[in-house]
Length: 70
Image (cartoon, rainbow, N blue to C red):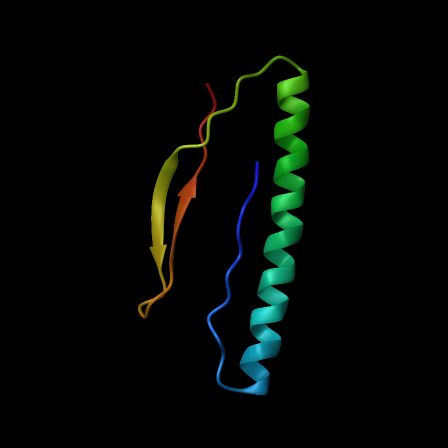
């Protein structure tokens, strides 16, 4: 599984720090998710990721949240 993380250019130093921290946390979470999916597949489980909801920040950014086990 791969993911692309794109940051919108923040306007202040504080916002840059917050965006960097959020990206690091997201990268760590995605790494753990990848490990969990790999363990499930190795155990014989078929994993399919399907959108379960969508999040919009009220400006220009949005994401689709997905998870599904088959």
